[in-house]
Image 1 (cartoon, helix red, strand yellow):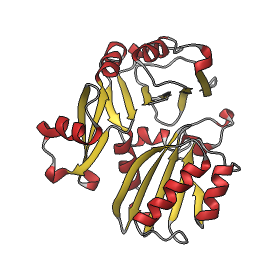
Image 2: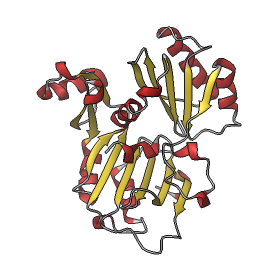
Image 3: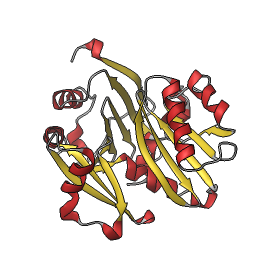
Image 4: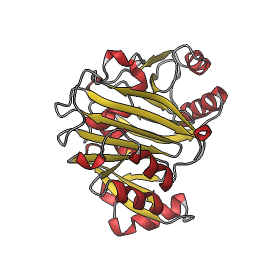
Length: 283
């Protein structure tokens, strides 16, 4: 992987903390198809010591991941707790009452295909009485085991569901959350306090995004004049993308993270971190 193949979107190191990460801190690594995010949460859980977001032009490979871990400015073996968040589309949500664990492999292969070997895991999102069955490509899982053998594996969909459950008291009748990454976005729709949709999409242009969102509103019979839309992630408030969204949805706003984990010196819009910093709130 050459330098031209990667782009460091954001990096932040809190120089006010005059010490390296310790065993009591927590390491989070999020893996998407084309991105790696790493951050270290302080033991007091009130501050991020380190944050980096890298985007790639090719899918994240075992060699790329191992090289990335090796180049971090700290030893990952120091942490007592570490989490790998899998942000991929290889996942299926199903009612927990119908979940049969020994059928997880067959379920994923039926829906997502069997083009590659996968390690299958599941998470019980008891707040919604839903089980999230997800797959990790075997060669990527083996690479993670080499560098983070004791890490816990989670899926971004489970985190999104757990986090929105915490907001039920403020729930609107129709609620859409949209989390943006450089080449993909995830949409979560709640209607009448019931989960209607949790799906990720790839996009290249603003038109791709608007088409998918309007199709979702039509399929789920949402009212574009009243559905409450919260947008966060890597999207600019003055971008053409957001401008087009505002033309189509009347109740739309940027969603800020629940807590102030980043130091003000990062000088980055706080909504960039909303989907990423849901993880520490849900583990």
